[in-house]
Each structure stands twice: as structure tokens, then as C-alpha cells.
Image 1: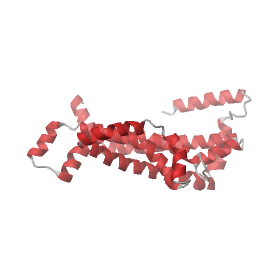
Image 2: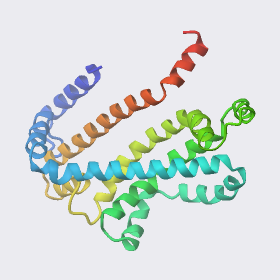
Image 3: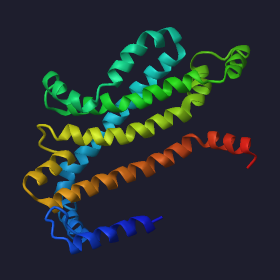
Image 4: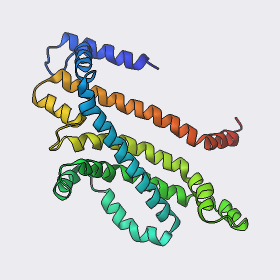
Length: 248
């Protein structure tokens, strides 16, 4: 598992050790800058607020995407009405909304959360719609025969059946949320990982800039591992059903 990362680091080390580019420091220099920068109060000043904004924006996008996706998935008429607007909004790259949101909301926490939500909500919304639409009609008829309606019908049939695609959308949205978190902090901000990386670049503190990029990679990797465990816990029934269908 660690063979490829170790190989890549060795290749990076070999390339930078023989080169003379100021902008490509060796892994040892980057590691030293990482320890000096992020194993200090800089982590609490810049990294923790970024992680908080990332998780808050992702949670808001998840709630909005699931609620809207279930509503549109259950109503063909509402879906047909909203589809042109959804396709139009989805085609707009979220980074171009940053200047507009800065004017409308101001440079504050709400603007940064709005940027994250505006970009990461789409995979959740679209996957939830398709997941709800794909609910087995036989199960729908079965619930109707047993008079299973309302909240119980929604939770035990609709959400459970759509959960594999919903989790796929959440996984895609998580990586988008990290990107937008950084972008939102690069504009007129005074804290955050994006701000710290841009500041280091402007000050020609190249090792510190690379250390911020390294921290972002580690953050994304850690969130991916945590999400994978949550996904396996939520979809354990689905994996069991797939294994049973394959006869394994």
C-alpha cells in the first residue's frame, strides 16, 4: 500500500536533489517547513477554521441535496419543471460565483459556506434523484399492499433503496468541497489554508507553500478514509445483497 507513495517520494527527491530550481524544494526541505509551519499555532489559526468551514458547507450541501433530490425524484412533474433550471445552474462553474457572492453577501463566513454549497450540492442532488427514480416498482407495490406509507415508507424504502447512489454523490461532493474551500479562502480572506498558501507564494516562501499543499493532500486522504468507513457502515446491507447475488 505504501510502495507507490514511497517510490514517488524517492523519485521527487532524486529529481530535486540534482536540480537547482528554487521552486522545487526537496521532500526533506518540505517536511521541515511542514513541521515548522503546521505543528505550531498556525494549525489552529488557519487549518482548523478551514476544516470547520469545509465540514459545515459539506453538511449543508448534503442536507439540501438529499431533501431536494428526494422531492424531485418522487415527483416527475416537479422534476420536468425544474430540470432546465437545474441544468443551467449546474453548468455554471462555482469559482465564477465567488465575485458575485462577495458582492451579495460580503467577505465573511456565509460567503465561504455559500461557495462550498453552490458547487458540492450538485452530485448529491443528481445522484439522489436518480436513486429515488430507480426504486424497485415491485417493492413500491409491496409497500402499497401492506399499507406502508408516510415517514416509514420514505425511510425504509425510498431512502434505503437510494442510499447507494446518494453515498456515491456524497463522495464526489466531498472532493469538490475541499477544492471550493480553498478557492473561497483565496479571495479577500485573512485566514484559512487557501489564504496561507497564497500568502506563502506571494512572499516567495516556497517550502511553506508546498507544506500547505501537502497538508491539503493529507486532509483529503484522511477525509476519504473516514468517509469510506462511514459508507461501508451505511451500505453493509447493500454489499451483503451484492455478495449474495454473486453467490459469494
